[in-house]
Length: 99
Image 1 (cartoon, rainbow, N blue to C red):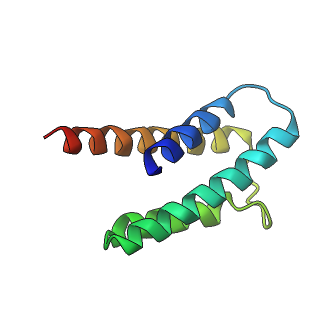
Image 2 (cartoon, one colour):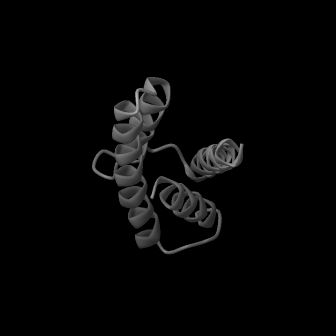
């Protein structure tokens, strides 16, 4: 479940680089905030507090109720960094499972 969630969020964050309607970005904020809150809870439950705090901070950053006005360019950079981080976690998880 976590792997699919990370992959889906990474894909939608990378789609934010394209010129999409405003409603898409609002949907991305809701989906991302929910996903990051869930991942934060799951990592805290698994005693991986470092990742728990990272995902809690991401949930706060992406939450749709009190928006952070960072500008499109900065948001694009944030989206790419977060997407790459999610993909890195996904790949490292698969490598650990194969050993």
